Length: 206
Image (cartoon, rainbow, N blue to C red):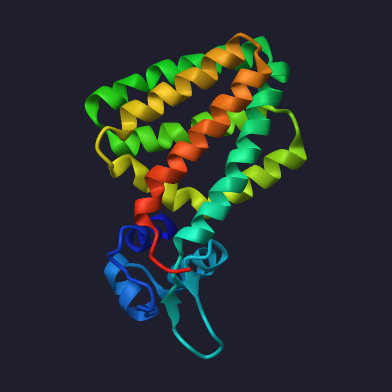
């Protein structure tokens, strides 16, 4: 439910300032109010929903400048993860990263956005795990959670699946070659490109 409501917000089906009534949402998703209340709490932590005391939750205005600031932090964190992964990944981890990357091409060719988006989450998680640094893993996964609706939305853009696959290819090759500098640069560049693609889903404002 969190994902469904987040996607409605990011794609503009729910607009900034719109009230999110628990009863209406429960009826829409055919659930009780309890999971709706929990979903709104999680969306609040992601910065997509705001709530004042004794008032209904409302869709917040995620501006381009704030979204950019989050992606800027994400690019730095992912660059560090890729650089460390190039040095620290085990042979088995490298093989699994390459295998999963190759298998994702089927989703690109089929234009299967949802399947590729699921793979994309797994791909980046492997990258974070491969850094073998628990504190960095915690920071990068928390930041990714805030950005996940926008990162998913990018795959709706024409040609984005193929470009994402090519960007992943550069990261994978650098890691397989144990080239930490190239891996870090490729991952940083990848997130910068994702930021640009996702910017179309941000709301105007300062």
